[in-house]
Image (cartoon, rainbow, N blue to C red):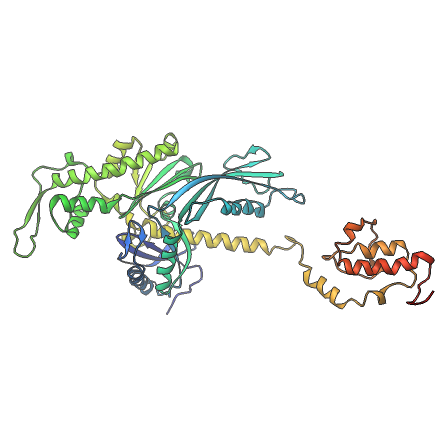
Length: 495
């Protein structure tokens, strides 16, 4: 029997080495319960970018079927992670004028300011993925990070934005691969954003932290300060580059190189004994190949240093390297390398820890989930849950009584359609005030009998012509011109 699918979120991590699917929901204690998960070797993906839609969709189906069977849930919609060298970020600034009828800034004003950023000029073939407000300025005064603009009195609202963009074709490939697998893409999420949700807490983000997710094809960076994401970057070097170097340096097969890396690899050769030897079976009748563990560690260290030096460069480029009180948090499959924490601290000079995706999981979760390689997938579930909760709260706020004036469009149209002919409803002896009342009626206002219409001051002829139209206004003026000329109504042809 299937479980109740209400409030269930599915995260799909399309990585370079694996595709993983996670099905989860929030329990009564506010923690995340992973109902089922599955993974399959990734085919058709290179450095985080989908190259072969058919192969990728087949891998997606395998991962989703495994997770669906464990959870007892039929999967229809998924939140998908995105990475790749095509990911870029830019800074932008926007401002809006608050409508005069607003005494204070409303959420709709903030939403309008954010949505306006979708109109900024982008490079050819680029599309916006995320828009992150950095700060808010009301009437020239910057608000502190813990003060929301909603509820503040002001007439002008400004903000600086961190905008993440991606290649349109690569985004389409994600949608096509998911659709080919029989699923619907409910949202596309930058992978370091998802990983940060899984391994960081609010204290980390407020103090200042750099999340470094070392995957198979890319190394993703997200830097937070004062609770706000300030910088994002995707580097095209990661675990697969280390595996390739081992394969070439030791003259062995790729799968053998991957096994050596994950089981025996280290980032610090000086911590490995010279006498430790690994024997690799030969191909067919060839003799076994012996590899020194120190040699293996030397190869791993050289490539890992290159990756971490680029990470250090990105952190310094952000200008936030002096504000990372919570240091660097390493996650992703590459964070499982022995001594990578120590090497990171040596290269960057910043305190470092390994981030496990169990920060928000319920206590009796499967022990296998506490693995750095699952950070993105679990983070996608968290992202989806938080997004759905925000949407539900917004819908609830939108239907609050007295929140907005009732829509009178249908009522107004009914009044217009049911109104008797204009001349039949005219009083027999109209006066100048009646003339003013009729000619200033506007299209959006309901038509009411003359005796119940509120009196208004006469308006200019130009304004009157913006009512029901020049034809209607001319008819009125013609009618009254005959009345005011001699006080009587003459029929056609009468002298």
